[in-house]
Image 1 (cartoon, rainbow, N blue to C red):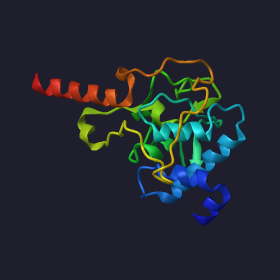
Image 2: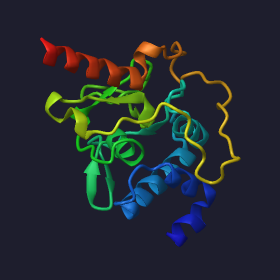
Image 3: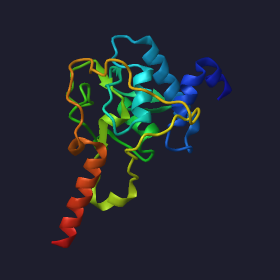
Length: 199
């Protein structure tokens, strides 16, 4: 890990601090290192490392799309494992047990969501632009992400302020309302399940 942190310094270290699970540390390091390289290249991508940091530190707040260019088959390989980029980064920062893109749904405000028939060359990897589709049989097995701001992993005094121009790359979607937030989605699903059990 020292070579990785030496190469990218505090950026990779800070992003590693927000990951959810320590079980796959080497894989997460490689995934984040790859992402930082792609975001620094900025080959027509939208969003910056700072935009990603803001989204991770403020999961309930409106945040920009953070995109990378899709590969030919739409997948990204990290340490001999291939998956769609948005799945990889949702796994790193939100749901460590995530397996497939079929478990995710983009929020309406996401301008560059993953879709099997999506023709754009960019894909949003902002983990807070996706909601987990929770299946009734495994409803209680998945942790819900906290909608409260998460302190910076580097220090408790460091704050991440909204990046300037919080406007989407392709358009300027309206701010998320409470009904479309990830926590509201979780609560709606939970209430729906309770109603089914009662009736």
